Image (cartoon, rainbow, N blue to C red; front, side, top):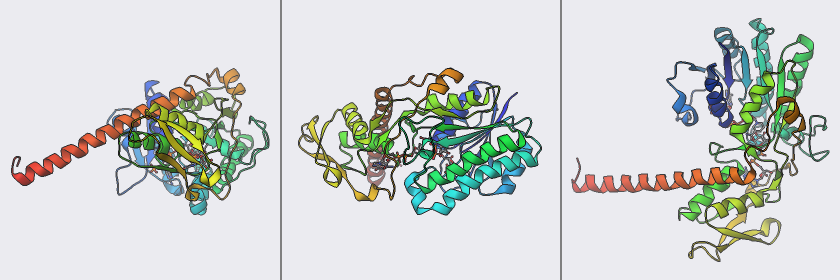
Amino acid sequence: MNTALITGITGQDGSYLSEFLLAKGYDVHGIIRRSSVDYRERIAHLEGRPNFHLHYADMSDSMSLVKLVGKVQPTEIYNLAAQSHVQVSFDSPEFTADVDAVGVLRILEAVRTNHLEKTCKIYQASTSELYGKVEEVPQSETTPFHPYSPYAVAKLYGYWIIKEYREAYNMFCCSGILFNHESERRGETFVTRKITLAAARIAQGKQEKLYLGNLSSLRDWGYAKDYVECMWLILQQDKPEDFVIATGVQHSVREFAYHAFKAAGIELKFEGEGINEKGICVNGPANLVGKTLVEVSEDFYRPTDVVNLLGDPTKARQTLGWNPNKTTFEQLVAIMVKHDMEKVAAEHVASVMRTNLAEYLEKGVVK
Ligand code: NAP
Ligand code: F7E
């Protein structure tokens, strides 16, 4: 049986990858961290399965990683754990470097310490943020890197140390250079999910307005569920190589917002420029028509922002046989908005039930 160890198993990608590998018959092990609140929502449905195992460890704790790799004896490691929010990396650059850069080294050394370098393949979650202040469009495996945030600089170390161990110690370790991939499980502070949740809340009268940063930023957005397949495919090749994983299609944050609100039944028209740009409702529920629903706030501007990402997935298509356009941009937006419309509606029902219950308890209707 193949045994996979996933770091970052509680995250968006970790949860989809777990489902994917369990369906392939893998024994799946994942690293979790202690937290005072429940953060295992994305994998709660997998807990209790005989082939699904969770272990406490931390990317900043070498000893925990060495002991765990020795105990699990993985045949494949998927290193997904990271402080993955670019804006947060400006506030916590040292923590980001420790987890996203040195953390990769710790995983590689844990494999070597346990003498598994001949039997354990390693996937590293590299990122399109490496291209940063882009030197060419579209970006491929040969495009020079120009990282443009503390997150990207940390991930650049991860990329190079993986390459170094591949060449120095002949280890099967590779990077997937993944462009932005989103889903209904995306963290709520990344721009796509922030937009789909806000569109759902505004459509259902639960929020007045959405504040965003740079609306003109361009991204190549794919569906996370499609992208985890590539992580696995990269490790099934005969030789270890790095791959760009992207759709080859680009949209702005403004376009994402337009389509998401449209899917929630609200048509927006954008007027003005820069900090003065606004998204006004021109069609939709009568109480919203004419209202400004989207505004720009400097709070979401970054000291340096990456504004023109577009991937060239030719190598992945040809070598891995992967279809970069399985889920279109429009389908991705629709999946996320549908999910968030249902989530907001369910939260409303739950809150009404709580209010009713409190009232019934007070009146002694229920005991
Ligand atoms: P995510 O949802 O933010 O998940 C990050 C995961 O890393 C969580 O499970 C988190 O655990 C874990 N983690 C953070 N610090 C840790 C530490 N010190 N020790 C152990 N675990 C730690 O990220 P994602 O979107 O799934 O992305 C997965 C990976 O791909 C990340 O490395 C990210 O940088 C990279 N990436 C993502 C994209 C994208 O568009 N999604 C694109 C390119 C590359 P907690 O739940 O305990 O916080
Ligand atoms: O920002 C702009 C923002 O935070 C996208 C991570 O998974 O993908 C992700 O990083 C763009 C940026 O993702 C808001 O300035 C405007 O230009 O959704 P994001 P990201 O920075 O691209 C890469 C590939 C990773 O590797 C990362 O781990 O949208 N933007 N207004 C905003 N961004 C946010 N978060 N919030 C806003 O209000």
